[in-house]
Image (cartoon, rainbow, N blue to C red):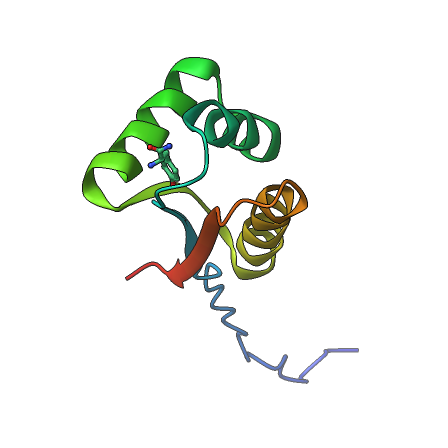
Length: 101
Ligand code: TYC
């Protein structure tokens, strides 16, 4: 028997968008000790001593410094945890987040 049925020719195109990344930003203040800032950066963002000192000095001199980029949830969680580490010691240390362009 000859098969005369026509196979459907629908093609499904899937577009995958990458999640928007968010920056974690270190904000300078006049009270938090430099070594404490470096310690928090190393503990929360898994960066080495050299990188942590560079980030700290940049924030100290320019007012702010981007620490790293993550998905929104991770960036917000890390900024909150890092800020809380300072609060725990009575320091006004502040980390904020903002979406990347
Ligand atoms: N400015 C602080 C001081 O001189 C050090 C410091 C650097 C604090 C960066 C916060 O995000 C900061 N002790």
